[in-house]
Image 1 (cartoon, one colour):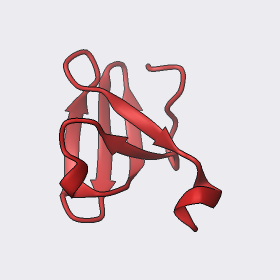
Image 2 (cartoon, helix red, strand yellow):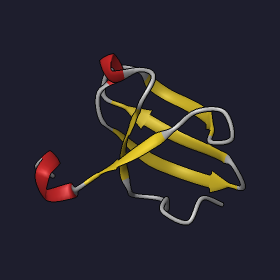
Image 3 (tube, one colour):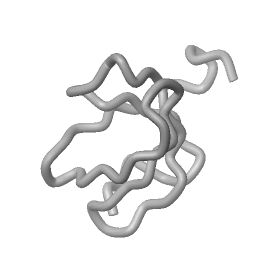
Length: 61
């Protein structure tokens, strides 16, 4: 599991900024399910794609 991710964390997918901010639903090893504002629910393999955490206060939730 990526050390910096846990369910409830807010993230952005570096390769898809148009999806907006997403909230992590599950983390199982490198597989992270994220529900994005404009991209819906996506299964991200963090071995192949980079997620950047977003500060909850900056995001406004």
